[in-house]
Length: 224
Image (cartoon, rainbow, N blue to C red; front, side, top):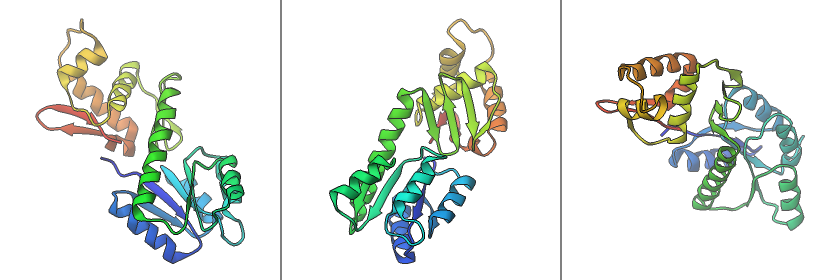
């Protein structure tokens, strides 16, 4: 499975290191920022699957940082804070936060709530016809694909192949399976057509091509 990237924003280095350790042990990749400006800079440079955002920070508190993130991104945001008052939770959620975790918390609680938010956001995007896998975004209704915000021009069959694999992530399909599912039952061409389309897809997707994986002796699958 491809690593999901989490941005940890906290002015306390020890807390960042602790949370990073929890997440990396659970299979996540971590980026760290000590303040809001650094967090925004990292968001503009790297695809991120979620943000863990401390509230009590100097210069700009987490609420202000959340508002600025929401001006440019719908990335899931989970607040990490020692504040436990109801008003603080409501304020954070109204500003666009997706969850609120009060310190101290256990590794198990952190991972469980992060996974729950990621699943919920993915379901919402799928229901809206959008699929997001790190820097790769697929809009089924608009028939568009972007990588890191840059549009990728695909033929209709390339788009259908990518969309089918992405909607069935983790499942392995043979070339014959894909011919039936993407090209149709009445297609009479060679199964190597699938290999050709996968090759061109990978070239166009560049770094995001890591999501399309070859299963030797069988066919292909999508991981994300």
